[in-house]
Amino acid sequence: MKPNKYFPILIDLSKFRILIIGGGKVAERKVKSLLKFNAVITVLSPDICSEINQLHENGSLKVLFKNYEKEDLNDFDLVFSTIDNPEISSQIAAATKEKFKLLNCADQPDFCDFILPANIIRDNLTVSISSQGSAPYYVKYLKEKLELILSPLTGNILLMAAKFRNEIIKNHKNIDENRKRKLFQDFLKIPWENVLKDSGDEEAELLINNIFKENNG
Image (tube, rainbow, N blue to C red; front, side):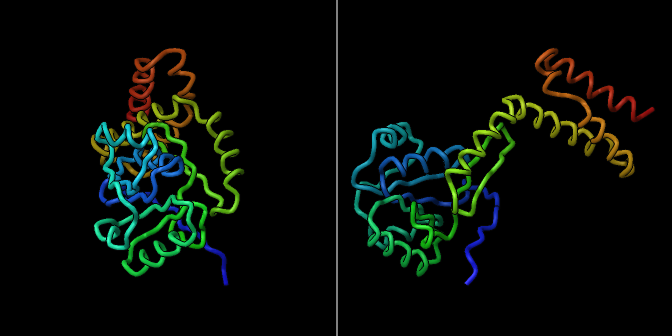
């Protein structure tokens, strides 16, 4: 039998109803990670940690103060089990399969339909790293190294790159593919991090305008 291979995919979590079973520190880590992506979350647990309670009180998520029952799954699409009880975890896994729900079960890879990668976020840039669940400690190590490479300005540069592309789509529709490729190449040649550090947004705007002028000549 082949080992599991999880397919990387980006989804709009705001369109799915998410249930997190458990209210401890593992649940807290899941909650904080998911909220970065506009997730709509309900936590199910008779007891919750102080951090989850604070998020509940400020309206960031809902809480069902009760023990798990099979019927609790009915109103949700994605389920996260964070409880440290193999017997109940097994019951949840069986119920999610029966009800065609997708399950992530903490520290129980055999029960998982999907896993969560480690993410580095710079505005609209998301870099995800996964070991297919085999060596999370090494993934953490790689994430820390990559975070040093991807400076805080990386997100700003991505926003500029998106604006540059939109300008081409909107106002340069009729240029051929070779000229379009040249525009992108000219953008990528500029050391944008140094420009933003040393001269700021105005200089960056001038450089972008010059790219269009030079390619219209």
